[in-house]
Amino acid sequence: MTTTLAVANQKGGVAKTTSVASLGAALAELGHRVLLVDLDPQACLTFSLGIDPEDLELSVHQVLTGGLAPDEVVLGTEDGVDLMPATIDLARAEAELLTRTGREQALKVALADLRTPYDWVLLDCPPSLGVLTVAGLTAADGVLVPLQCETLSHRGVGQLLDTVHDVRRFTNRGLEVWGVLPTLYDGRTTHARTVLETISQTYDLEVVGPPIPKTIKFAEAPAAGRSILATSRTSKGAQAYRAVAEGLVARAGRTPRAAAGRS
Image (cartoon, rainbow, N blue to C red; front, side, top):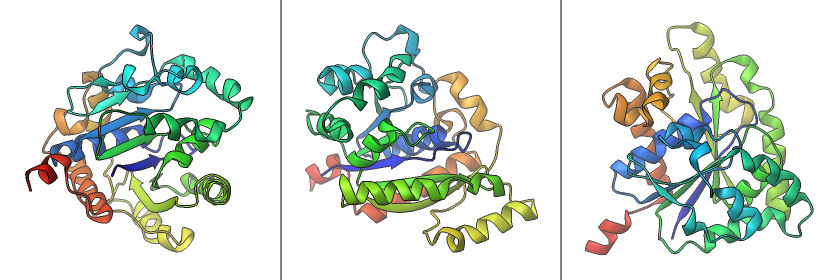
């Protein structure tokens, strides 16, 4: 079975794309076969993994709106993960899908048609609560919410949880909230520590740890077209994402397909 995890927060600047890229690379290091899906028209995940969206003719847009087989657009990356890339064309998908019956199921149906077996599919949802995010939540087994350790970043999380509630009612009864992932954490400040301590009380959600530290290393990685696990392997940020990935694997009870095949 494949575990599909949506990484979502309608607020931008919370390290959502960084988390998808880094967790994907960390899971690959653990021997898991991983597919990342870029659902953001800004295509930041695609660019971060060394692929120029402007050079692409096919992307997830054609999969969702044109019925193209998903395997036709999947690309390999140097981080050991596969990628279903995005381009600016995806901005039109919201309008195109709005007129279609079963639009919320479009991504779920597409992923079911993948011929390649994956242990994990990570969905980088756009910073909104539109059709693409709802499609991502509908296709997912769980949702992980990156949350910057600042008071203002809390605003809007309630709206996301309301959307999750609606998705559970209408399109995906099995969707689980896996928790909040604290990001951009500066343990030197009292404010950040206080925010971290109150997250679970504020939202009654599990806090997935360890918190991801704030470091310039994350900004340097996309320029190299790699995740921080490749550009700064021993940094605190890379180590934190490895620890989070191990926790996700434990929660999912997953064994890498390669390992399972040898047993």
